[in-house]
Image (cartoon, rainbow, N blue to C red; front, side, top):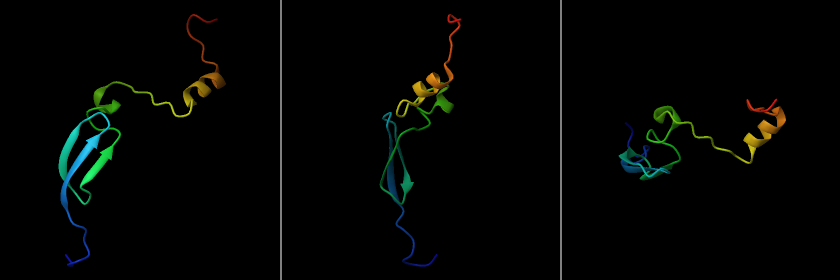
Length: 71
């Protein structure tokens, strides 16, 4: 490796929005993430619907989703 062109590789702390903390090494000492393997729907089996600016309601209005009780 050439000297002086690579970033410093330091101990890093990755913090998830759910509170999970992982210690590893990276070029950044602090990393914040929104989802991790403890809270991601693929790993937990639970679906978490994130609605941004009313997109779900707008989709349901557009396609007029009917429930089983509605005609």
